[in-house]
Length: 381
Image 1 (tube, rainbow, N blue to C red):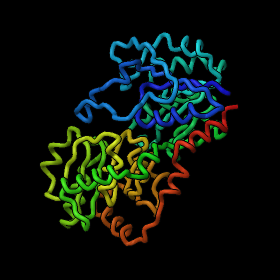
Image 2 (image 1 turned 90 degrees about the vertical axis):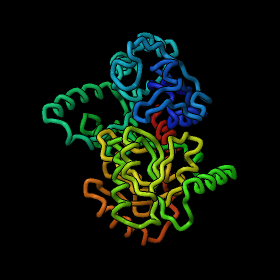
Image 3 (image 1 turned 135 degrees about the horizontal axis):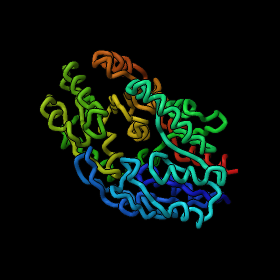
Image 4 (image 1 turned 180 degrees about the horizontal axis):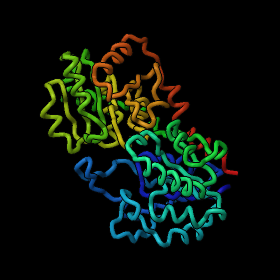
């Protein structure tokens, strides 16, 4: 049995089920160190959603964890100095670990762990950064970033990368092919794949409340209503289509909400933020899930995973880090929102003419917690 210490900021709905499954493996003794501290597990105000968020899933069940004492004057995961945990290194040493797996370096204490244990303990790393936003940076900023990141990743033995764009990033900043292990970004597929009888009742009620009928074609957008996600693109699409049987459902909230509601024609519907247990129902409102993100900072797009796990095809922007891995001709199409809604509509017409195939099993084989766990177990020794 190998002792694995995961260093991460706070409980996240995507990671908690994975940690639980890792803890069930007989080859692994797991301890998760939450560096934000106990505050990181509490209800938090999200300025992008413009509301307090409390996930309705158990995020601390089924695995061992420790909260660290965060002494930052402004605690949080939104800046480098938001996580300062002076006792973290001694906590790790006291627990006694074979492998330290750091999730994200851009916090004071995470970088300190990389430095302290370099050459003493096997260090793994996980992050999902890409090069998709490189065009926004100046030459000098790129140069400084390259030098600094090569230094950061020189402290790492192995990286568990999430997809193609993420791998390209690590290769650019000094990692070698033999240090890189594919452990693709995944969600709890089983939770999304099937609806209970209660779920179908909720779906019927939601369809009725949104005035959606069987012969409507529904675009679904899920996420923060912010510039990065580019939700206005769908309003432009539906106006250009001019077809009242094509509907758009926006699910979420954010600072663009008043503007979108002001611009939206009558066949555009709005739902407030929906929590995790309701999301398998929400995705089934759609004929096509659309993620028109422009970035910067759209490193993956886990909503794509969720939609595909529900059996709903996806149209994804090329500026989503995961789109090149997740989307193929069977389950959707890629588009560049900078080319305008006309090109999107042409791609949509072509996709709707295609014979629909069952893509869920193929998707699950490639993007699942089981695939991540398999990668971890293969690299324990």
